[in-house]
Image (tube, rainbow, N blue to C red; front, side):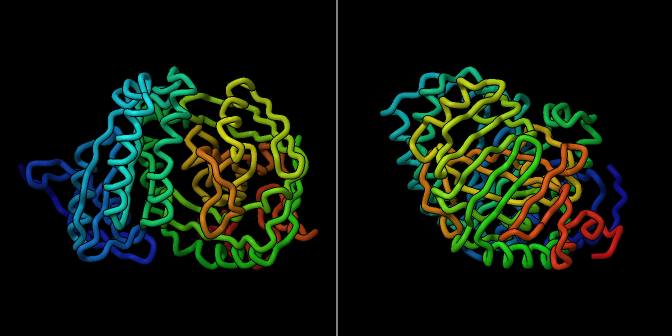
Length: 404
């Protein structure tokens, strides 16, 4: 079979890749989309920066074999040793339907032992049905989450890791797009040059580190809290793909007021709309939504689930509308997320929980607008950063259509 090759240079973070490719070409009897190779090279290079001799676990959830193979080859190209685990959502659902304590104690012991041998972790998660686990009883879900939490904690705190979704027809439906158009959108977003975000992220991180009081106002929202002494972390392609956020965390008992989220969300296989939370001394004392009963079941998973473990501002210029996929939705330009549950080590308030639920509010004018203040100074209005030092996080600059 004849193929026409072209030389293509691609940028991912600080890495430049040059390859001879077509959109699809034959390699060792496996057809690999050249976009797979580009993404795999970025994940193993820029995102996890794999080194010679390091071990990396590739956790593949309902994704094409060709992408798994592209990741294996990219890891080897970095000199690392790849390990692969394949998951299927319907099998996972079946296991969880009959989950027992003794069963998952053994599973957690095995998985933790393996994770402790890993230096890095790359997870790609696809699904033809995001509600596949919606009929798993909540007590089974909570049991599995509690027993598997040490594995998650070790992965988050002790390895280099990156997690991303995989484009499927169901995701295209969620986004209201054709499958082909969504795939093009996905690869454009996931291979974004994050270097352009770096100056603005640094300025925002430094500002958040100096900040004490935060106030957020918007339709149905009047919230105050402190982030004094917590610090902040920049997210530009090193943990999640797509990326584009800076996060901190409220002082645990400082949150007061009410927040009305306007982005839909899916958590543990259940869809939620119009979540509204009321806080007193950091604790969620009232929670309502289109499924208030299930919402409160999740928030009652453990004491920490009713406290906030993360506060973040999102600014990815390519992501504008929610699609019930949190790895995309939490990066929406002009959004923030305010997260009940587990806090991150190093930039957290010490809150512990098996829950970490990123709930999103969009503040661009078409979603109702809103303002964010740091120590009484307006920082963002209707989704756009107002201080000159933060203009490089606004869409016009990030897309190259305007100056900072």
